[in-house]
Length: 289
Image 1 (tube, one colour):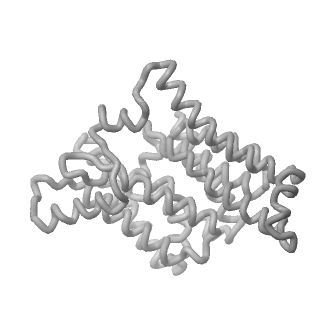
Image 2: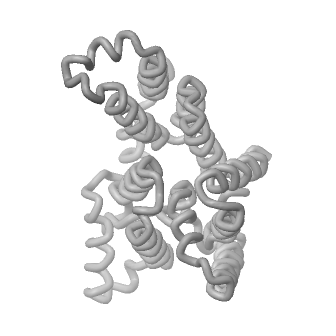
Image 3: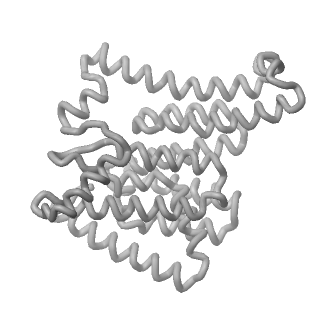
């Protein structure tokens, strides 16, 4: 129920956000491409994707309205949903930088302290970013010192056999297995993760100039962070195809690419067919992202 309601909220917020920056046609295409993405059914499953996506979009909506404290509240809730919520500080930081740049026009660096001290809006923005950071730190301390649980980065290693590496390490390890033709060690999900990651990354690189920079900043960290979490004996990437659902600017970029209706319908049909196949594998317990 939580995932279903969160999915509806995410679709609505995404439609509204895209409609503000572009038009309703692009907004409709974006929502459809997200909903029928090959792993889109995870938005309706018992995973955190839908809730995290809805909260992240709420942060961007509040930033656009310049309601900084509400952006901080939604961002804090996002960090309690998934640790990647801490990256929502970056769009706030960018907006703060732009605001300071405008406030300091003609005043020089000497005017920085007086502006920060007197400008209520800047203080609110800094407070919102601090709220997100303090919430995550408080969660870490509560689980470790009160509940006696390991630190999150320790938990990944102890119970999930994960470790952290360089962003390119998982991809290089996967390609090494392919070149060695070590097919018994390969899994279907590795091919899917790699293909979808490279696809959305290429689309974002192609259209990044047409997106707000805060969207681009968010997309980069949300694409890179999952790639540093390595798993298995070969230390390859894991669950990337599911984590990509949170990178909503990539679906906006894809909607901007698919302007021609025949091309858009063909792409959407491919997504729908892929989702049906993956859902069947998931239902049969043959594959889990």
